[in-house]
Amino acid sequence: MTKQRRFLTTPYGGYLQAQIPPPDTFLAEVGPGTPGGEYLRRFWHPVAQTPMLGDLPVPIRILGEDLVIFRDRSKRIGLLDRHCTHRGTSLEFGKIEDRGIRCCYHGWQFDVDGTILDTPAEPANNPYKGKLCQGAYPVIEYCGLIFAYMGPPETKPPFRKFATFEAPGVRLGLAEHLGGNHKPCNWLQIMDNIVDPVHEAYLHAQISGPQFLNDDGEGLLELGIEGEDDYWETPTGILCHEARRVGEHVWVRSLEYVCPNVIQLSRLPHFPLAESNQDEWEVLPMLTRWRVPVDDFNTREFAFTYSFDGESKDYFGKVWPADLSNSGGRPYEVMQRDPGDYEAQISQGAMTVHANEHLATSDRGVAMMRRMVREGIEAVQRGEDPRGVTRSVDPLPVYARETVKKIGAALTPDADADLLRRISKQVRDRPMSAAG
Ligand code: FES
Ligand SMILES: [Fe+2]
Image 1 (tube, helix red, strand yellow):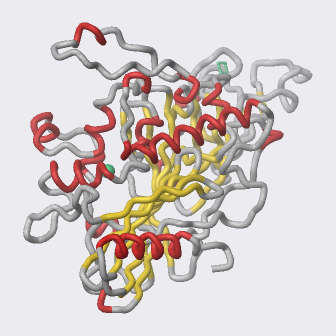
Image 2 (tube, rainbow, N blue to C red):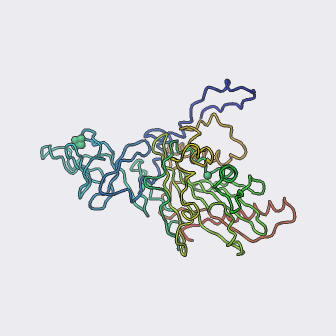
């Protein structure tokens, strides 16, 4: 861990901190053989979307490795080292075959598991064909996303589903544009954003005009003035609740972090007025999103959205059809006038320097998450499964949801704050599990 820089006490003291300490590469690096990279390689990650796979191979870069992904003519998906094991030509120029892919240069053919199937210019008894392999990773296609496991074969866990994925009445959709949402920065600082509900009340509700406003143009959240925020460890990560009083109702929103790079978001912070006429109302998250490292300085986001029976469109797509503030490509002046998550995250630098920060009271979630990542890396170094890896095929419980309960205010503000906390804990203790 790098040494934290002391808070500056000298006015006009920029010179005293002009030298920037190094980033915490132990946590942030993703390449093969690095501590963080080995940790991330213990999990399945989405690396592509089904519509990306047509009749041509697609070059992708994941965890600092150059790969090629394709669907062969037998409809099987291959994820191979991009560079041909013969002499390094890129398989993005290869020809898709009934079985696997054939390198354009000398015609070596590789099956989807990397097995060398053909070496046209070699003698019949050559030592390659049927015996040696191109690098390959196992994949699973699930509801439009293609997940890969890039870790040691002997530690491969079962594919990890969440209890919400196959809940009755739920349909999964793809949220991001083709290829995933690219952010030119390290994955970990993007994760910081999710265990940081304060930014919703400032960045999204106070700073940026069109985000998180009601029909009268007012910010929908206040800066913790009337809310009670709490962070809890779950078996798989962190649950963060924001419990608020809204008249006769208590409104609990939640954000869930699942190790190492998954977030589950409840709906955008619009108090559900229509539904609040009921005594109790609850809805599953609107989004499950992965932040998948491309390399140390680039990340791609892939996500499932949820639609429920009776809804023609998923909630996320309906309320936020173009999540522009989370993507690049806007004119610079618009980014300045209306910054969102994208600008906040990438402007921290290509890899946030933790030793340069001064974490404050409201950063409890950030500190917890980084501690979990560190503990996960250390577990892998000891040869153990990190938190979040499951050896069971049962779906993981889901804690994120949005809940409204009709309960009148307690007599005093302190008693009401206690009441909010109590309700928040009741919601926490009822995760959605495989059993429903
Ligand atoms: S470089 Fe691929 S077959 Fe020769
Ligand atoms: Fe945000």
